[in-house]
Image (cartoon, rainbow, N blue to C red; front, side, top):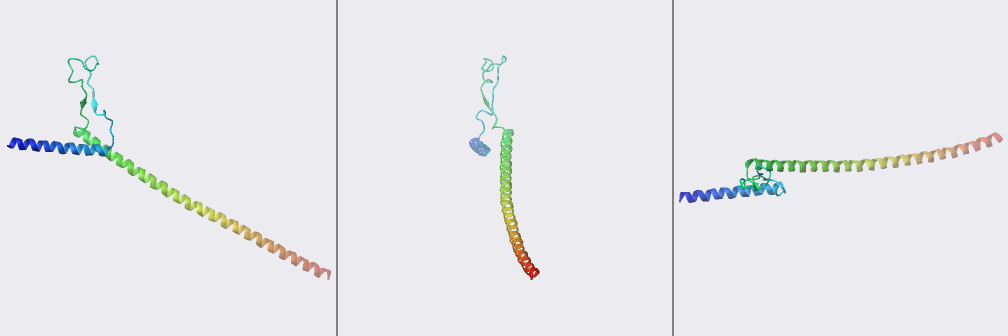
Length: 145
């Protein structure tokens, strides 16, 4: 009875580990299908030699070891860092675009005010000229009289 219980516990533990690994793989994104496979070549560099038939097959070992689990977790962390950096960069770009719009609006307003002031100065100058012209006419009349 205890051996049956032990087998059940071992099976349950194995399933939990597989689910955990599947979750890590899902979060890590797509990994090339054959990235974790290794090929064992025979003495002459050929696959499938008679003496090494069991060694010449593809061996899946990448995601079954603790080392690969750590690599998957590291990949997740790197992806998260990249996403955070991209968010920061996009936020900075948005801020710069907003600042640019504000500065453009200020520059437009400033140039508009400058143009108005220039127009006002012209009007004042014209009024002064007409006033001077009228004074000159009265002075000439006085001189004549």
